[in-house]
Image (cartoon, rainbow, N blue to C red):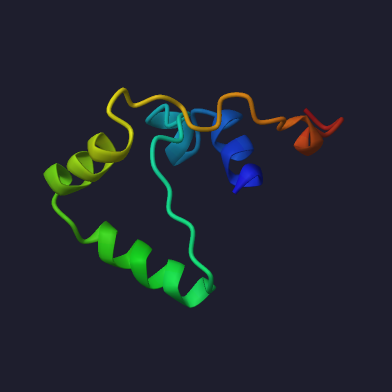
Length: 80
C-alpha cells in the first residue's frame, strides 16, 4: 500500500491520479486474503458515489490523509 500511495503522491498530470489530483488516502480496508480484497474493491467500485462518501465519512469524518507521517522515502529513485 505504501508504494501505491507514493505513486499517487508523485503522479504527473499525464496519469489519472495526477490529472484528478488524487493525493490523499482517506479510506482503506485490510483483508487476510488478496481474493477478499479484490472482491471487496470490485463491489465498492460498483457503488453509488453517495455510498462511497458515506463509508469514508463514517470512518474518517474529517477526511484526513491517513498516510500522513508514513516514510515513503524508500520508494524514491535517482531517476526523478
